Image (cartoon, rainbow, N blue to C red; front, side, top):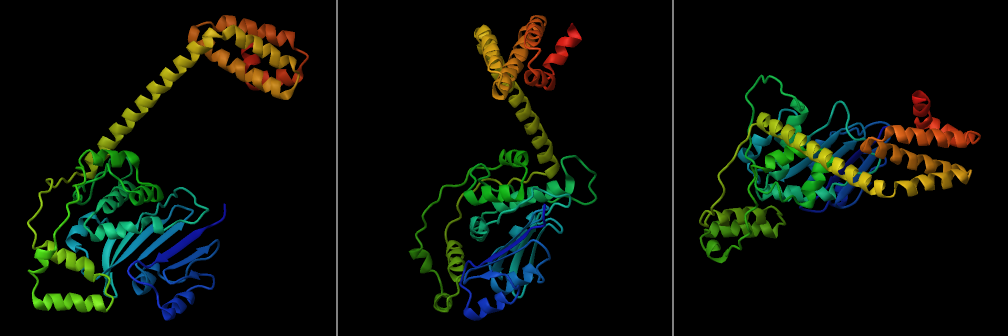
Length: 379
């Protein structure tokens, strides 16, 4: 399978100018550029520039995928727009980092797997993940927590190891049982372990109901200088001004009740995830057994009809008929195992093989299915 790398950048808060588009075009000879997006793929070779630097200069989000398991998602925020103190607990050395480049805050989620993950051949899609950036700005850190779970699983695996440093325990965000399409796409794109999510969701409260805020009395509490400052920023096209204004106004509003903060060690989550996985396997095994029992009971009712159909199919002396007959015999073998009538089954198969001993196509299929072999061993 050939090498494949996918790079995509998008803007959120603005469109690229013509000069910026021209500058982005010069980054690669076969990059596709529009006013809001740039995409470049490689089957051989690499992108010659640091994607993080390109992001800081031109774009608001970046996605990188490679078919050997590399996955990387970056978001750019205006400096100071998001809370550094709130984001840092979700950071994991070299895997999830938050820093400043050229005056912008950059969240870098690099969840590449050294031993390889699922191979990709088609394009990724950054558009389905863009709303996660807005969520983070609004204080919804579910994507960060999911990334933290994946990062911890990459570092620790699903087996306990002795820790050399204290473990970070970020707050479990609300709404892990109410995942948006973007969060589901993130889970799929970055292969976040489902059982870890289920374990964490046991400690995640439901999302609070959205309450409409009356901003008019709050606006009255702004100073004249603050009002002028925000208006100037709006007039200049500063797209972050609206978010900052809303945050400033909400600071005047009475605090809303919130669920107590919960922090769970990854070791505990991993143990619970293993228990949940065992429970799911036991349930699936039980359900499979019930399904098999029901199938066998239904088959027992029409067993003789099935034996007659076997003869009909063999008598067609056609390849398709032989295949159907052998498939039926495999089901009858399962029924014999279920009913404890293996001796009778083998006797009837022996008679069948003897009766059609000259049909080499049928005999070879019986050999491949190990039905004829079993007969001779018991004879």
